[in-house]
Image 1 (cartoon, rainbow, N blue to C red):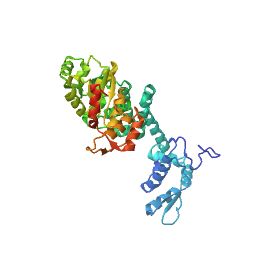
Image 2 (image 1 turned 135 degrees about the vertical axis):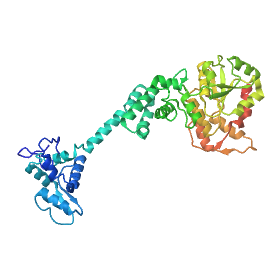
Image 3 (image 1 turned 90 degrees about the horizontal axis):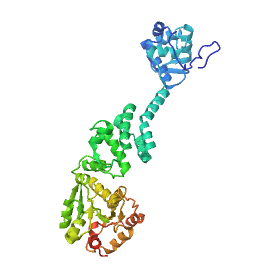
Image 4 (image 1 turned 30 degrees about the vertical axis):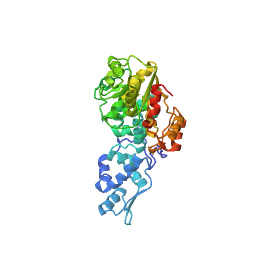
Length: 432
């Protein structure tokens, strides 16, 4: 703090630490604490909060006679004429010091009248520090699991945690739980979501739909597994299952043809009939036989046509029926882990390519007539009596064959999987 030659604070200086031991509070209230000077006290306190020096003039437009009289008593002289009332803060500071009412000046006086002042800069610094502490669990997570770095940056940037929990303490508690869950995901073998929540977070309902912990944990799971965008109960169930957390073992299914390895599958394969496997079946008793090659299609029409045309002679075939379900992922991971070479075919459109990309991020596969060359051949061989439809939707990448996305963008035409039934059935027959 700046001092004068006699050791007193310089007029208008903001004290580093204000004490009230020497303030004559009764006299101060009569002199500066009257209602007519509330405007002046508020202006001074506002400057203290803003960290501004108490120098210069403050003015009040259209003052009342009582306000003019109060300033006259404070300064021991008329404040001057004019339509507004102007007071220089240095003058008030000097009056308070000389009179002994507040030897430490105006800042000490206002603090004694209105309470301690925390400068706005200090408030903001403390708030920033509190929010840094709130997000500390994210930093600890990415030190252990760097693959969550991009997700953690988005959580900080988009403010979703603040919207969900409001205060720094609440956000810290929320992120502590979320990061504890993500740190141990995915789980293998799959477990009940409720049992996982009880074990890791202390409550079986901690990850129930709609809870802040469920919202953020599910977004982290999607970063981890690459699970695609979506909404609804079925989408959430499959998103959880992509990390090995099961909400429902029976609703998630996968359509298959001629898989073997359980008594039921063996019987259905002998009949050449499609089978629907639940996630419960695949977790409790997955197929014990893994064929050297297993083909995957996107649309049920392909599997139905294969069953009609080839029956028991059709090699193993799995149908995703759109986005890969938790049951489909469980089955394909099991087959891949036991040595099966997975071959995939889907629609030649942006939606089909996104499904293929989502599957590739979870389970390795190789294209089954699903390359740029195959797409161009399909355009040439299309039945002229069946009109081709233009592509719609947003473009996506094709990491298994980067030229495929470029070919679709160039042609602008979609080719559904059903258009290539004859070609796919020829492959399943084992004939070129």
